[in-house]
Structure formats: C-alpha cells, structure tokens
Image (cartoon, rainbow, N blue to C red; front, side, top):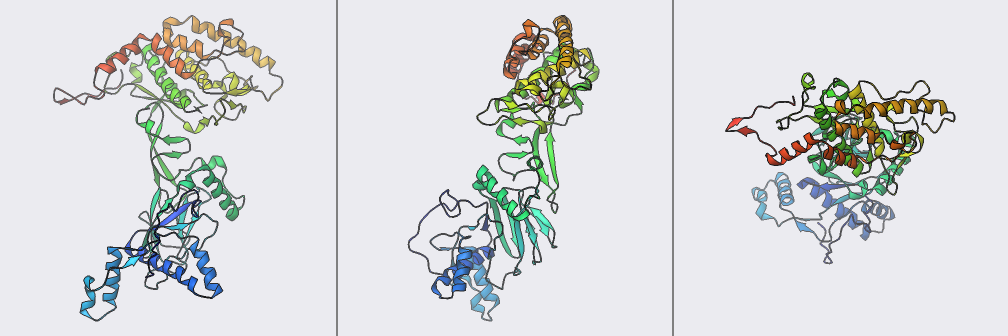
Length: 520
C-alpha cells in the first residue's frame, strides 16, 4: 500500500468550491473487497506520477479527476481479514492463516466520485482476483426518467437494490436516494448528490442528456409524471409528500411509489384515501349540514394549496372524493356527535395543479388549455388568475349538487370569456342572463341551502365584470371563505367544539372495541 501523507486535512469533496462540487452522483465502496480495490486503484494512480511515460501520466490524470480520497490512510479490520484470507488461500503454510501474524492493512478511504459528464470511464479495480469483466457495466442517466440506471456491458451480473441484471440490454433504475450496487464481488452505494437535486444540477443533467441523445427526449410535462429519487420528500407528477401530509387530510396523498425491477418505465403509485364516491353521485335534497361539511373540507384543502402558491385549476364534482358517506342517508342531518368514521371530502386529480412562479401573484390565462371550461371563472379564460379561480369552480360544483344542474352552460361557441376570440358579445350577453337567474335562485333558496352555503355561493360568484351591482366585486380567497363559513354555520361550530372536548382518537369504550360507523 502507498505511504500515508503526513499533511492530513479534512475538507468536503462535494462542497461548492471543490473539484467534485458539480458531481451528479457518487459511488462509495461499501464492502471490504470494494474498499481494497479502491485503495489499490489510488495506489496505481499515485504511482504514475513517478514515471516518465506520458501515456501513463495521461491515464493517471484521467482517472484522478473522478476520485476523491482522504489525505491519510486508515486501518480497516474488514480489509485486513480479507487480505489475510487471500494470503491463506494462496499459501501452503498453516501459520499464514493467522490474522495476527500480519500487521493491519491500511487503505485509502472515503469516496469514489464520478463527476457528471456524458461519458466517463471509471477504473474500479486493477486486480484480476475480482469477478469484474474488463468493461463490466454501464451507469448512465435515463432520458425517460432522468434517473441513474445500471446495465451490463460485458459483465456476467450486477445487483441493484436486490434486483439482478443478468443479461445485456436489461436496465435497472436507481430509484432511491442511496442505492446498493454489486458488481461481481464489489459492493458500492450510489448516491445522488445535493447538486444533482438543485436546479443548476438538473440543468447540467439536461445538457448531458442532450449531448448523448440530442433532441430525442421526453417533454417537460412527460418528465413531471415520473418520480424523483426517493428521499424525505418526493414528487410524482404533482403528488407531493411533505410533513404537512401528516395533518392535511383533504388532499389526495401519495404514500409510496413502487419501482418494478427490470423495467425502468414502470412505476406503481400508492395513493390514499381510497375513494369510491365523488360529489357528482350525491343526491338532490342532501341535507345542508352535510353540504357544509363537504364545503368546509374542500375549502381547507384549497386553502392549503393556495397558501403554498398552487392552483388546482380543475375543481368539479368528479374531482371531489367523499369518504364515509352513506348515500341512502344523505338527506339526514349530520349529527353533532363525532362518529368514529366522519364524512370527509378529498380533492382529487392533482395532475392539473399549476404553480404560481416565484415573484408573481397570478398565472397568465391560456384559454382552453387546462381544467374544465364550464367550471372556469371569467378571469381563468380572459386575463390572469390565482387560487380564487378554484373558489369559483367550487361554487359551480356546489350549485350543481344543490340544484341538480349547472348554473350556466356554454354551447358550441365555448366559454364567452376566452380572450383569443374576438366576437364574444353574444355569448357574454347569454352568460349574464343565466348568471342573473342563478344569483336570484341562490338568494331565494336560503331554506334549501342554509345560510352558510348560500353566503359562500354568492361570494364565490363575485367578479368585477358582473352586471349585478351587489356582485360587482373581487372574489374572496379560499381562506376567507373558510373563515366566513365557520362563522355562519352553527353545526360546524358545534362539531368544532365537540372535537376539542373528545380525544382525537378513541378506539375503545369501557374496555370494548367501539363500533365504527360511517356518517349517517
């Protein structure tokens, strides 16, 4: 082994100013065989500096730029045992099998760093005793998922996260933040670097993929439908797991992704809760107290999204799931006593979500490109919008449930507020007529709707171009609508008070399992 350097220093190989600061992935030797092989390669690289052969110096310079190791060698018991075992196998002397007969083996350690480049040759071993072929495997980035992938070149086998690759052409994706890779008898951890997860690292990765594949790559929208490497938070399309997912229960949540070994294109997404009823299935004459519960949950989910600068853009009855609702009892008043399985509304179809970019407060309208036109607010089609367009769409959805029809509909001419069509005057005249009739019907149906849902509908349909003076105003946010709903609803206030009185979860009563009932 090479002699240790006396000028030992500690530094971060992945720091912003380090040579490896722009690495996308790193390979770290894990088992004794890989650590020993790594140390022998470092010896090989360092020895070249003492030779005059220009070709060898060029080889040394090439490999050295992809390796990082500590300035000082360390003693490793596992490597010592491995070396002594090899000596024992190669010797006929019984005494050679004793681990204590040889001094501890010191090695170069720390990380083997592969910098992000389109094509890189990495030297993993110089020994013929390992089970590696001359060109054993390929580690590359998939253009479909932008994940690191492993495939065989001339090697016999490779194992990635317990998935075996035994034939050329087979590819396995490294779908975890840290991935176990076994090449022959050498085992490594492949880890995505912090730089790889930053925007500048992603831009660098796209440049590399372009250098390899040219323009033959998926669109940005297609890439949004694929998972990022699993870490503390992960995103699959627009489904995001965050710490808030533990308490925000009114948004469909991704709880797990399953990568199918051997097929880099196949992922299974596990979502919760399971929803078999949506708002469009709710019958007419559903009791107003249950409409209030549904409305409260929808506004809670929207308030959460809007607080994080997300706009759902496609709120409609089929995208509002209902859990623990008995349709045959929908006409009954909701009990003030909290059942073990209370009615809950969940926002679905999160693939439609749009982000309000940093530095902006709205999203420019793109007429006819997202959501469902009949539920779009006027500004959604005509100018620019924010989370308040979801409030309008929720109002249209609630009107549909309460009255059994949409408040207005658009014929073959489409939405009359589209800014990309010049002559919309006839369509807008028709809209204002239907709009006036809907506002009148809402105002006259407090007994059917209840005061709180009625107030919400009138607020949801506010917009500055209304021809009704009382409706000619800026629409309130989802958070303000939620506060107004809670103030106006006595049943919601009673439930809220009850929830503070009772334990958050009570599985047993007087030592016996409690009976779990859905909202009736």
